[in-house]
Length: 361
Image 1: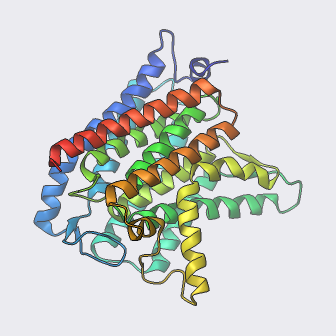
Image 2: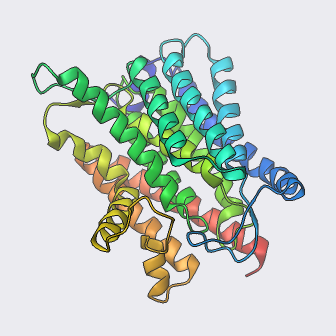
């Protein structure tokens, strides 16, 4: 059964291919809304003082508006709401899952925004992240452990919380350079979209990923170096949470630890980045959750003499290779992998070209 037939089975596709048009429409709407909304958000943020000051983690040399996450969120939600309104009957079987992911993401956008502007204790942020992970579990979106032991249910809940909280923070911690997280999130969303579209139990993920991919691309139009707005914790939390949730939509079953390899591969770059930071800080006798420092992968590339643009493109390339490997492990065909790769490269290339034309640098 091909991709279209799977979408038809799940109610996303209908005769004539209108289902695929709906997915494309969702992507394009999120892209355009985010792209067009950011200038207004940036102008308002500058007026009211929503900006990141230069610090040890960020590379900006002057205050930079940090409300880009609000525009991303608005673009994604607008696209999903309109898609749901246009096709209410066909989406009724997956709408609850879409709303669950959006609810958790909305909570984290709010918490991230408050943290961006006023600061929140790490314990409060962690508590909210755990609660939003439990929201997924409560709606039957989880890593389904089937080891055949009496504690499988508890282990399932624990692994789901660990996965969601871990990825949410990994994406946030990696957000220290223009265009990095936006590009990595776009690559991951498009790769996951290519996979989810071929499984009948992942229709909700297909819809959410289409909107997330469009939102991240629209944001990159303003965020590739030199950026004039960043996503802040609000955007990074939203990307991390939604990506973590969509990898387990459809009850990903874990009967052996090997089954964890595909979802980890999709998000291998942020996982490796956070892991090496923790190891380095522990080896140096530092608290791994201490004040952010210049010990992430992009800092190392910059220390080797790469420009911000070259460092970003390098890490995008690594993320793409990891996602291609994940797609291969998931059993995707060569045509699916090839089309996904070409599409990602062309869309990112077009966005970078447009950005460079706009800044004339």
